[in-house]
Length: 196
Image 1 (cartoon, rainbow, N blue to C red):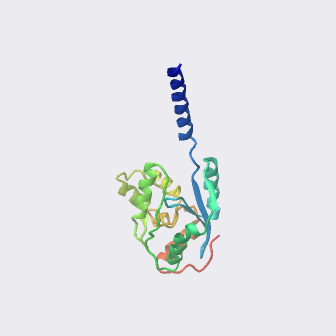
Image 2 (tube, rainbow, N blue to C red):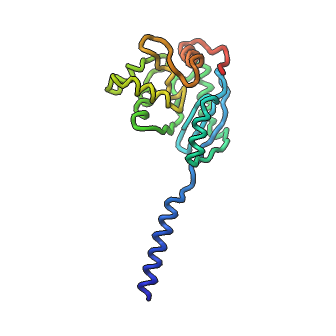
């Protein structure tokens, strides 16, 4: 009888342990708005770093996915204060490299592309082909373009610095006027108009 009771208790512990392992607290993202010379951005961070920096217009796709995946969204200006200060300095032309920690989430390929984007110096542009070559796969320009298009942390992961091989501005989630304004800013031309 005692052996039977021990077996039941062991089973109960295993079930309890299994249940607790899958009953993990949902992750919280901290959100705030940031008003820039180019319009309003939404700043989103986790406990590990910046998860997303997008124009308000671009945020809907992220919000839908996060809610579907059970993320908790909490308004918190203070949590994103360091990022806001760095953005202030960037838009004032005083910051060339961001130091806030990032919490990038993507495929291994996307993360590698975003890492290469972060290596493009302030005020310099690269073509999609050059980014693909830096990956070691010059034929991957289309895949590079798709990875760049999924970059959730604009400005800090500087996808605006990637242009067409012919020097023309090409796709940018925030719109080509915003891309032009960011490149102008990095060339010493302060943004003079708000971009919606």
